[in-house]
Image 1 (spheres, rainbow, N blue to C red):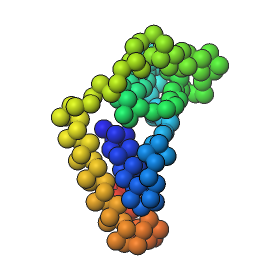
Image 2 (image 1 turned 90 degrees about the vertical axis):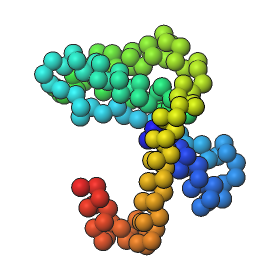
Image 3 (image 1 turned 180 degrees about the vertical axis):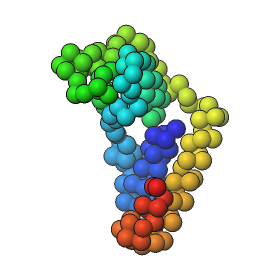
Length: 153
């Protein structure tokens, strides 16, 4: 939902603020590094499921799909991954891409009233926050005033 919302906001900002009329040039493309901070040292084999679930979150929705995904290795909580661990991480992506039919379908969430309601709420809240920061004088003013730090904390 977050990435669907971001794509809509990106489209609106590039169209309205920057006057980009070609929809192809307004396309939002992004890559993701799946969160390795959520991996655990205890029973690291369970990190496999954690990684796959996070990867699915950024690939299931065609309208919000990451264009590049970098996965952590199952044992990154223990130290830097070895070449074998890195290859294993790559194989997870290849299995998803070549051994499932996920990428063959249009957006499987299109038309979901649950997803649309969440995306609409995120877009509305985000645009309100952008307006609030613009009224402060922009991002630099929001940083200098301490507003952004206090909101992040």
